[in-house]
Length: 71
Image (cartoon, rainbow, N blue to C red; front, side, top):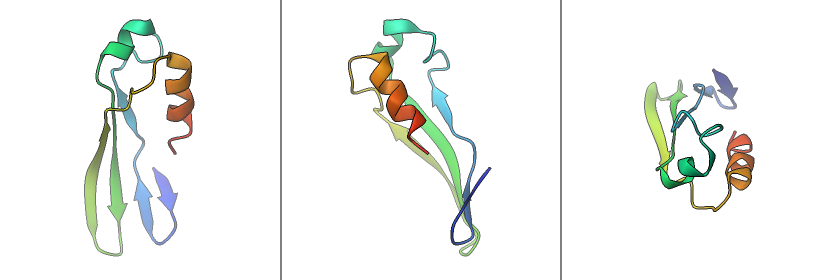
């Protein structure tokens, strides 16, 4: 769990496909999805956030650079 300013927080994010780091170039052909849960304790809401169509680049090196800077 990551605490955010303003009494908000997000869960640990997960990336699909699970083999994105070891799948090689074949994982570039799959649709990537990043998922996490967002909590706003001020409004007492939580929602699951999906970021899809994440793999719009041609090499794994660029994908992982974006992934590591996502949060």
